[in-house]
Image (cartoon, rainbow, N blue to C red; front, side, top):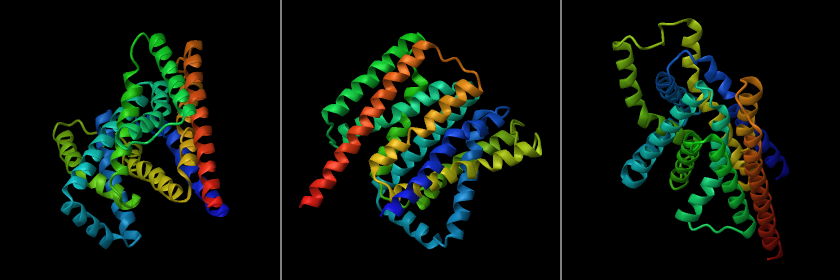
Length: 304
């Protein structure tokens, strides 16, 4: 059991580290408009996932799951909506990175777990402990402080957090294998991406095959850059308890914040540090409370 958990930690840490440093990859493509990067990401992610499914000899299972989805119209359209939601999240994330908004982007992914919990309370009737309620209050104070210091509402951070949390909620209600689920998601959006790519080529707006070999390679590899961390995450999630996945999740926005402030010289004022401190403390309190709650449940099971 310990070996399995250790293996799960390696997979999950790998996924979150990749997500944390991916802004460097998108920065290499900052001469390409965000709409084309997103279009490329969808098309090549589908091609990468389809080839991986064939390699894993899961083609029959994939076709069977698509048929099952089609017979369950509610699940079919929920997954379609989830595909649209994650595509919008990807677009906003790429735009933010290439417009020097890494600090606010990292804030969005710090807020995301808390939004997920809030959605769990509203839609899945999950309950919060007193410590978790205090954590929410602290995170709220941090966000309000940040909003006042910005002089505007951090819409980018909240939109990233909310769209990813809604995507997670939708995925939770549709039990699908991670590999085949991601393939179906990209399949849903790929026709729209292909039509948009045709539009870009017809209007001489496409950078693919028109700029340089390096740009072509980077655009084609967006598929692998999208799919590989998701596959690593799926492998890790199978072997780890939920509270541990939640704790490891903070690796990615911490890397993004570091990149934004240290590498790309984005502004990070003392008031920003104070605001983030409230959010960090909230996340630590929330994670510790989840850890204690999980251990208490395990002890109850052992006693029974």
